[in-house]
Length: 405
Length: 61
Image 1 (cartoon, chains in turn blue, cyan):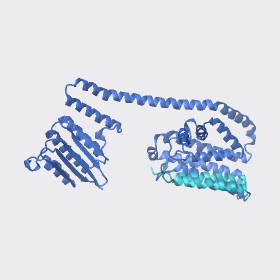
Image 2 (cartoon, chains in turn blue, orange; image 1 turned 135 degrees about the horizontal axis):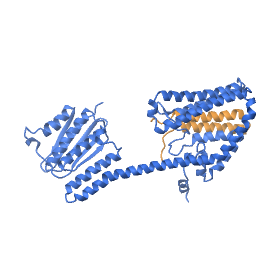
Image 3 (cartoon, chains in turn yellow, purple; image 1 turned 120 degrees about the horizontal axis):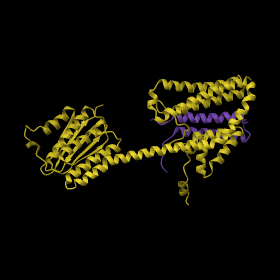
């Protein structure tokens, strides 16, 4: 196998959160190296016992390795600071820098004492977490902006971590001041039994949690499949059955097919009905659908870009509708083409048909369709409309509108 | 090989890890005496600085 082929066959170096025990570093490394992650976990634990080196290496790997589905490294998936910064990563970074400074001061002897500094540091970290969560709970706005997953579980987890830190700080303070000595003899066996029980039961517990998560994911997938099947039944299958019954009327069949195509596209495009979207593209689609239903002529709409449906855009949609209506009335059964392009400076719409065309100068004065509903309307809104036509050449109505700034 | 966007966080992380490596090398050749009491804070500081760089140079969303 070539080097490139070998590289391509190896999975990328990513933290595997699906099989994670802590951060997914060992699981990711194991998958990449093709070895059992439990071996790497034992190595990291052994290295941690040897002066804490394993913890440092694990933290480095956690920060440096991106998780599956993330574009870049950064061990914590966190909400964003204003301007797109990761607030929890920044907070964690500042915390670690402060901790390293404290350790250096301790090494230099600029130190009040372990019995006071460490409990204070832990209590400060825990207090900050608790206060932050309570501030978020009091102000619901950021919660609404955050993704759904970031709201409930992780916020509760952070609050629990804060409580644990504060309780740990208090216990540490009591321990350093020998206040726990009387309780130590009674508590030590309980703690040892708890640790042993945790070590024994942890694999089953982890498997149970993962099993529940997999089951939940499967249930969500199953619901999505059922919704998709129901939608297909209510829309596409019904239309296909109708088309079979109307097979002797090609125009009606074409109309049914086009209406279904529009509905399906709208559904694929987010599911919101066209009328509720309030954009130029949706307005053009609606106008085309209306003319299509009234006159049984196919109208193809292609839109490049989109913009909100303000007063100018509404006028543009109305003028386009009038041009499409004229084409449907006079250009016969040939399909009408609508092409719209939304730029940063202006919006342009072209309505084309392959009908017989007409002489604009020969249009009687009392006919106001082109003159008022298209040209006049566009000029009143600061735009312009030009009709390109000639006998036998079809017709193209060109509409331009400068965008409001 | 596809061109990549410049990522300041990766540069900071690389420089810091290089710095850590230089410290270890100097200790190895006995140019400095790197005791655990200083090495552990150095690792923590490196991880903290990388996290800070990653957080501050996060993509604008």
